[in-house]
Length: 179
Image 1 (tube, one colour):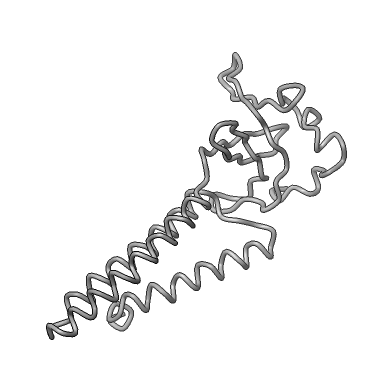
Image 2 (cartoon, rainbow, N blue to C red; image 1 turned 135 degrees about the vertical axis):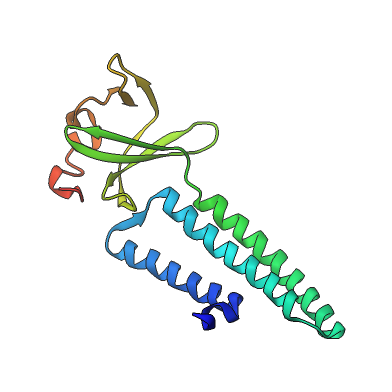
């Protein structure tokens, strides 16, 4: 266990490679992480790198080595922070919606800034959802039962037949992952 914490930067780099390998394996299996799980993974990796940088400063005793370490860490950290911020902003999901339509669960994420669309995927479990987008809603309302109902042109979705992609045969119930 001590070996893992001896060099946190190296450990964080290895864990980030494993995390991205997990994302690829899930993609090959037709899955992806839910938004909160993806953000937790990115956050833990960033926390590990930050702890590793602090560990590097704490270990350096020679002034010349310390100045070189500080300069290189600042250069690498600024580039890494810019890249990480870019990746997180691209990967950051919007608000998550979970809905059930005719006994089938779907998870939707808001996309866009001005004209938000809610893109729905089939729910798999609490960590993953299907990688394939099933349908896109443009609006929602709360009905008299307190249930959130989503709008897909030209009507609100109460049943699977109300989804144009389902009605046109682009996917069927047998395609859903949570059967």
